[in-house]
View (cartoon, one colour):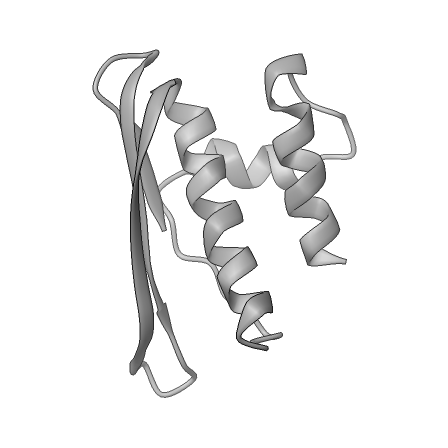
Length: 96
């Protein structure tokens, strides 16, 4: 999963590939976002990927991303920056 904005903040895109345990592509996604930051785009890509996995009943998930900061925010007990709190909550709810 990946997300990036042209500037920070800027117009962004997210995308990802969901594969099964054999490495075969199950589905892929991409989406255009409006003005957002790089970290918000990365988190939105992770959320979208998690949501799609839940929707198609994939429960064991391994995330491969270049967004180490996003993974730290997700696994942190803190609420995170105010502008990311709702998105972080949605991701954490999917993980539970």
